[in-house]
Amino acid sequence: MDVIISFCTALVALLICLQVTVLLLWIERKGSALIQDRVGANRANLFGGLLPFNLGIVNTMMADPLKLLTKEDIVPAAADRLLHWLAPWVAVFPLFLTFAVVPFGDVIVVGGREINLQAVALSGGILFVLAMVSLGVYGVIVGGWASNSRYAFLGSVRGSAQMISYEIAMGLALVSVVLTYGTLDLQEIARLQGRLMWGVVPAWGVFYQPIAFVLLFIAGIAESKRAPFDLPEAESELVAGFQTEYSGSKMSMFMMSDFIEVAIIAALTTTLFFGGWQVPFLYRDGFHFPGGLTVAIPSLIVTLLQIVSFLVKVFVFCWIQILIRWSLPRLRYDQLMAFGWKKLLPVGLANVAASAVLGLLLEGWTRT
Amino acid sequence: MDPDVILFWVVAVLSVASALTAVLHRNPVYCALALVMALFQVAVMFVALDAHLIALLQVIVYAGAIVVLFLFVIMLLSLEPDAPPRGRYGMRAASIMIAVVLGVEIGTAALISEPGAPFRVPFDFGSTRMVAQSLFTEHLLPFELTSVLLLVAMIGAVVMARRRA
Amino acid sequence: MQAPVNYYLVLAAILFAIGAFGVLLRRNVIVILMSVELMLNAVNVTFVALARKAQSVDGQVIVFFVMTVAAAEVAIGLAIILANFAQRRTVNADEIGLLRW
Image (tube, rainbow over all chains, first blue to last red; front, side, top):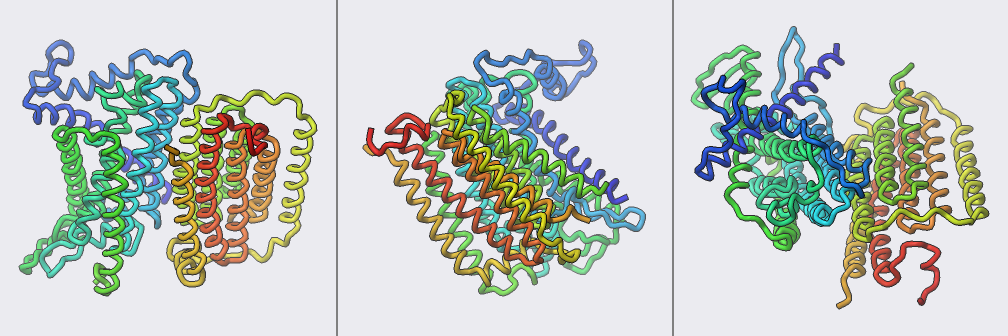
């Protein structure tokens, strides 16, 4: 029975990951069109005119994947065939695994059992996320090396150097979060954000660690090599960086890894800083507003509300990342590296020191 | 068959195979990737031995940073696959013999040691809390010395890699 | 139930032997360094297995330090190899033997 439950929660986590990724494809194309005051992709249609509206969805979610999957898979003659095939898998697989520790709800009470809505309840959840993000570098390295081409090689070296530099800033932001909450388990951190500060304001992480939030968000965007940090794969600079020699389904896997990382950064930010699945004033038995008003709600509806709140927050942060991508100019590579090492790293260290000092001075700062 | 024992045999076969690939393959990039596989198997062994924090640290530090460093250097030097070895049969025979003797010796020492009473460990053995408690109280001095060591290593690496203008 | 701890000790011994084999056999200094890392990992497995046998976390703390020292050593070792390569253009241990030319 336990095995079936674990299987179901893992399946749900995987489905959330995949659905968010696919929807992001559409949101990115239509959203960027909105920002740039144009219409976006709207030419594809089903069976020659079946749908009269919203053709963007048909374009991005049906035509694009179909096109990518049916394209010829070209491997350069001098490329290393095994590594060329391996790189997209290594790029995508650790990112899927990261969703195993993200909590998408509190508990669901089914037939007298409380099922924790988290695929794997690891006590070292944050370290697991850091480990999987570290493994994402291999996709870039192996992809660039296997292509045996100059653009790919340069893009790969730059991309992997950028990724390992911003991992440090991300790690420091995570360290301050762990210092604040005293636990590495993501579900525990989400639960601890359910209290109220001064009886009114929900105790979300962003109020305790605003600097860490900004740090994690920026480092996360840099880690996923999205603009403004996307010089390693910028189209006008390096053709497509380490992805240059990839086509067809392998290219689609690299693109998927890009969007999965957007989803991961969004999920991580909501869980650590914005309460995860917490709805303000909602507890397991209903709403308890500060004025004294109480609304009782059946537990399944509570769970549904929490899952919806989680998904809404994830989409908000995905949208913010898309906004940032289409608004800001690209950073030059030396500016990028200087920013990571000389600006983010000292800020991260200072934040850790300040969090540690504050944690000592205000005893049980967050755990009251 | 017990799932833990099946896991052990799978991990054993995979780790020995990837370790052999790592030391024998001609292409250094394949050696590095086989090393990543071997280090992953070691992380799985750590989990099976109730060392959860150390397993995660193994993936973050070894598989996620050290081997990336190896691959960086291999890429930057643009190393070609090694030429097949010419001659040197004496050295090859000697190294095989030494390795076999070493392995048999340590393995026998391990096998003839007493299995001891069936030991149960507390539920959070090897968790972050327990390791941290031991690390920051009993072993505080080595911890601080290790941080100094890392600082020295960083300074040394930066100084050596600097281009002499 | 768990696989007997002695099995892990034997596996660690085999990995150590393979690492030693690599150090003695290969001439590419980067692969030699990788074999040294393999040996260090085998030692880590031994420490963790014995920690479980002795029911004390001290073995895992030692592994923590071994990992840190190994990271520092790899960084310095690779920096040395890079500096050497800049001069001699080779990573073959046979050709780096002499101190000059």
